[in-house]
Length: 79
Image (tube, rainbow, N blue to C red):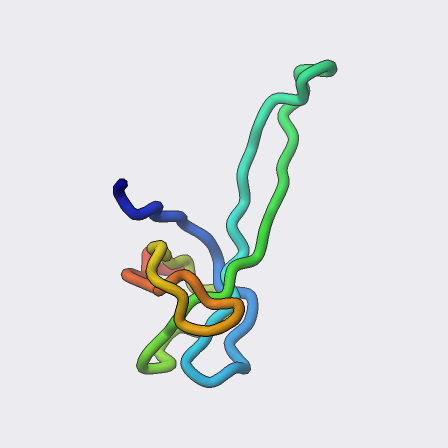
């Protein structure tokens, strides 16, 4: 099974070798058919502490690194 890749914005970088990435998804409400935005935060591994708050990054699913980290940052998309 291929690894999932998500795109989001870094919202936290205070932890050592970890960034918190907010990933937003959009979908149509089942009854109202209005576009709804929902977001979820993922902790991702950042080996060199190179990503800062506001950076748009791609994260890839990986084997568990810690209790909460199951994603790793693979690339920055720019600010």
